[in-house]
Amino acid sequence: MGNLKNNILKNKILETIKYDYNHLKLPLVIFAFLLIYMNILLGRKIPAFNLVSSIYRTGWKGSFWLGQYFTKRFLGTKKKADLMLRLAIDDINPLPNTEKFFTQPEKMLGTIITVLKSPKENEKGVLILNYSYYFLMFHKLYQVENILDNYIIILEPSWAGFCELSILSYMHLPQDVYLMCYEKRDLKFISSLHSSLIPLEIGPSWFVNHENFQPLVVEQNIDVIMVAAWAKFKRHGDFFKAIAKLKEQGITPKIVLVGYQVDMTKQQILDLALHHGVEKWITIYESITHAEVAELLNESKVNVLWSKFEGNNRAIIEGMFCNTTVIMREGHNYGEKYDFINNHTGCFADEDTLAASITKILSTYDNYTPRDYVLNNRSCIKATEIMNKVLSKREQAQGRNWTEDMTVKVNELHQMDYLDPSVRDSFSGDYKYLFEQLNVKTD
Image 1 (cartoon, rainbow, N blue to C red):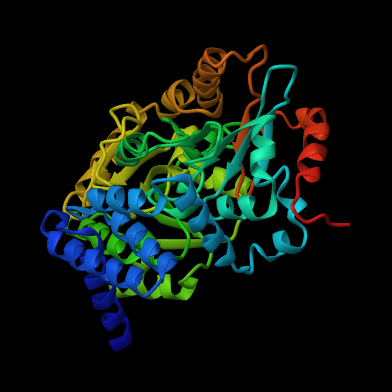
Image 2: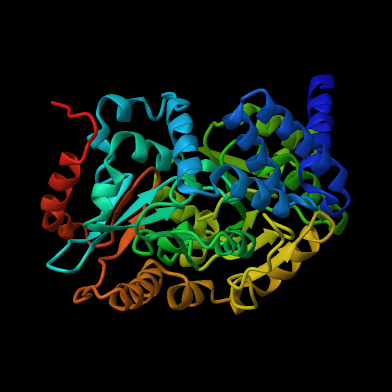
């Protein structure tokens, strides 16, 4: 128990430094500025820019300016950007989940690299590149500028905070590259660069497959569900502490946790529940299927997202498609008041108000209509309409044709796919062409 308390205190201190009282952290940004220059003087350009990325991502006072300043210093010209790209590519090392792409890079095709439109005469095709980590690998493994002659590239980042080399390595390419910007802060940052990166105001959570997450006629006997990996940034312990206040009201909710191991284990999650006295409320499901997740969401009244910072979370959108009301932690990422959290879908809450918010929704959840809202405003079909509108206008302005719109893609658990899987065969020629653009040919 002593180790658990120490870990809770340690994590709380680190979290406070990272995410709280950001308006007071200009001295930390100044100190980071000096560390960055120290790394530059030592010839450590990649570690220096990685520190820039980390500080920008915090949202601390002065961090936005720091990101702009060093982006111009490191990447302000194509010559500088090319140097940083070569250094970054040399710095890429295989990870357990990416090693296969180093030996068989064609396995990225149709999973990480997905074609949405084939090229025609004077008309470009379109492909999407998913997950930030693979953006640099795409440079390393494929002839990107050749591909740009025939295809428009759309980047779909997996984490908020866009001052990073994986994204900015595309800012000096000879033709437009589109970037999904789902946080207003990142949108402002990318727009300020006046580069080849063109923002699209959508994000990964728009591409949930609503056909896999539909309302079912089942009894809603789960009060609260939290679909979140066993990871420190998901803040299970803080969720347990906040929800424990329901004891004061004599409420004993049924809570379901769905996840899988990342930097914590199932047992560590249960230990946190025991520490906060809510272990008897908790049922845990580990590494279950999409269909099983959808069924549990249908049985739940409230779906909680309690992280302070991450990417464009899709679990809450999956819940909305199952007509499950959502509570998102106030101040998530950069504190934006997301329009999809509203009177139709749920509410924001913090540690002081979570218990009261859950009590309110449990008594009124029939009044919410989250599925209708996301189907009309935040679906893969709506996102594709937005992309078609933006891209067609810019392509026609540049003298190219746009006679056919993109097909609709969806994000599955570990890769992309098509909403209508039968269209995959129609892109076989595109994937053959992309295979031919490999820098290293494979058998």
